[in-house]
Amino acid sequence: MGYVKITLEEDEVPRNFQNILPDLPKPLEPPLNPATNKPVGPSDLEAIFPKEVIRQEVSQERFIPIPEEVREALLVLGRPTPLFRARRLEKALKTPAKIYFKHEGLNPCGSHKPNTAVAQAYYNMKEGVEKLATETGAGQWGTALSYATMLFGLGCEVFMVKSSFAQKPYRKIMMETYGAKVHASPSEITSYGKKVLKEKPNHPGTLGVAISEAIETVVTDKKGKTKYSLGSVLNHVLLHQSVIGQEVRAQLAKADEQADYVIGCIGGGSNFGGIALPLIYDKLKGKNNTEFIAVEPIACPSTTKGEYKYDFGDSAGMTPLMKMYTLGKDFIPDPLHAGGLRYHGMAPIISLLVNEKMVKPVAYKQKEVFEAAMVFARSEGIIAAPESSHAIKAAIDKALECRKKNEEKTIVFNLSGHGLLDLGGYADYLAGKIID
Ligand SMILES: *Cc1c(COP(=O)(O)O)cnc(C)c1O
Image (cartoon, rainbow, N blue to C red; front, side, top):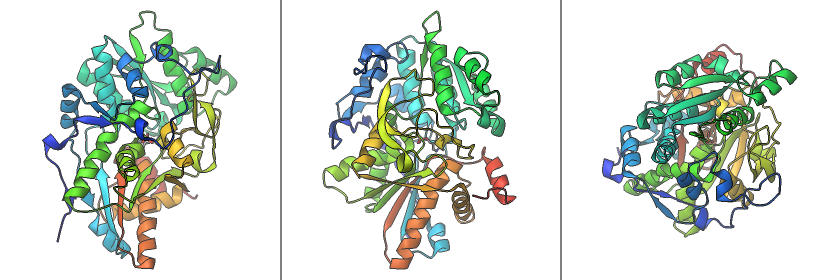
């Protein structure tokens, strides 16, 4: 009956991160210093990031070796992760298409995010940093960084978007269990948080505001031993996530398959970049003819409705300006169960590929995404994260299109995380409270 899941051996976990920068169809435009409008130099970033991360951010090397300790952490996290064939879903949809999904939700944190968290924590530890500060939306990134700092003996301070802080109390408990300190953002402990609260006392929080608070914590640390860590958007984060796509490449080869479609949800672009970029590299070399589909919520439609221009990464305007698809730094998306997709911008690498028409963006409403999540739960038995359910929705749509045209295409999507701490969303759906 063929594969139900395609697994790899431990020694097949990649030994290098694969970097797309030297192979992009056009060079990325540099980040700019907002005061001078000149490109930021590596030294401008040293206040907030360790040197190795800055080096990787602009590296033109195609392969960057994964340090042994980081590779070991990836093994502890359960890599290589399985590529499942969703035969029960195919049957439920009565589709001739083959549907595969890469399961990134099986590790202790429950999402793809620890792939970069362990690398970032390691490089910071190596350079003598004592604590990392960060933001988190739904809590997945905060959980991953709390876990990674625990592994490498660092402290961790997390600013969690207030709307999620209230919705997802168990995420906070996970972070605290790993030893992190967690604040609802906007908070009273930074001057930016205070300013935001003064203007709008019941501000629900956004990733942009939380990023500003985390960066303020770093630049005001008198000892200078705190650095900042970002869970998505930047080149080095997508680089670390390339372990996903490199494994998928090996798994598809093992099953003698070629993907017709590779699908992922996009918040900042890291899990999609992780699965897609190694295969986009292959496409650029003429080795596949895959179509790449990036899925976002209609409530936060950066690549389908945003503008491709220079904008800040945060809301306060403290970060360099990046060329990306953006809804504007002050955009406040409605609270959404897919909290990890509530970001106003998009990774510059993914933005460039969307602009070059190498990645096709699509957007869905929250209700149809939960409907797809239910079909998946009731066929494959997996309760997916609301973020990942955007990818499920797009995969199901493609599979139904195949049914109509009687085409046996191969669809691969990234299941970026499980939804066991997102049951509030499922509860709302089951109660008929998600109407749009
Ligand atoms: C954070 C998160 C996302 C969105 O972030 P990307 O950087 O776009 O991957 C998607 N899925 C899950 C499960 C997440 O935790």
